[in-house]
Image (tube, rainbow, N blue to C red):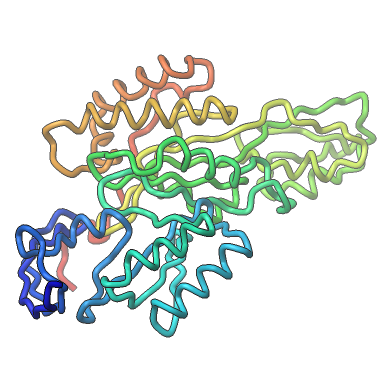
Length: 348
């Protein structure tokens, strides 16, 4: 039986933004591996994140769309009580994290969670677990089934290697609570309305329901005058109409590409409208493949930074056309918009 040795370990830790730092920790290790080192970067890629406390890690769980069954939640609470610290953490991307886990306990913790079907998430340059709002299942504003999409994207694409982190987000309506505008690929539920004059009584309710001034009432007949350029595809007019004269002509996902947060945030650009669920999945697949090819030789780079070049945006749109056809694509989309924190470079 190997004796337990106290080692001082120096490792290279590949920080998210690609900054290499030397980190030294004291750890009690039963024996040592071939190199006498712990590869913290590899652990982080598997959802095991080194804390500042000696020997302690945060274990990030796979929670597509921020949803977890009550049964799994109970199992996580039991595991956290046995192996973690005094609290768990809900990350900004809807993942539940068990904090202060000693790395000696990785195996029993992960095995205990797997018994209930709960997996560990991942970090680093790969496709992350999607975020999503509650969707149309129970939210009265919901247009698309965001939870089902988050599950499907996790099954099909989770963990695929990419040049940098790659995040997808699903919002069921224009309120965009999940902030799809700041995802590498963001999806927003949308409808385009159509008015049937034969069913309309001129009650003006639709004009009152529309907060975007896309519908105003005729001063004499009370019937709606629709300005499509003001419409944000929210479905309020359809849901408010008591005579069903407003109907959904088109329904699906508005797609934005290239958004991300961080020190140099970018707002994604709209590249497609009213995609079906199947078309949305095909677009994700085409985007990941295009991203892998376009990022070759450029180091760690987000897709939104690549798409700052018009040539690359045009090439990306050609890839989407091959995947889903041209009909629902935006013609000559704008480049993802950079948010400049200090536009004049003036010291404060």
